[in-house]
Length: 190
Image 1 (spheres, rainbow, N blue to C red):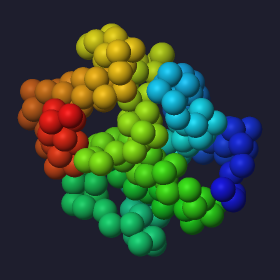
Image 2: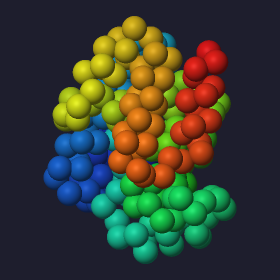
Image 3: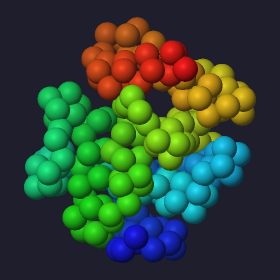
Image 4: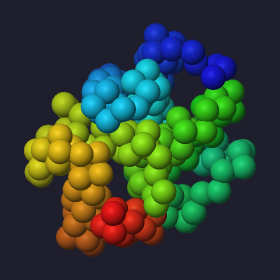
């Protein structure tokens, strides 16, 4: 992987881009991702790196996020364009691909789909999706249930996380991204 070779380089990059609270969150996600990877037989170094980098564009203004996503070949949909909680993910993939020449598709897809999930997620994508929800800094109602499910199996953790997200969005009258629904349906089928 060219561009960013290790966690020390990733830390320097995110320290320059992220506010202290987001930086602390990214470090916590990296720790959770490394633990999940060790538990479920994935590459711990890659999981830690993806955890550090997953929110690299989170603090960027929406216009900058759109510019990054638009300059690349990444297709972004209307839901991502209109929702700041989603746009940073494809922008992050584009930024890492373009600025740092990262070619590891699994890592890039883990960054790309960490907010919505998707059907056909790789093990690393599942780990980053779940680590982002259960990192030690997360305090939302129901997080303990997701953490407990994550201890049982990766599938159980992701399924519980997806269900919690869909329930929360539905309860709040917010739009649900079709990828999240597709991921949930796939995980339900097993």
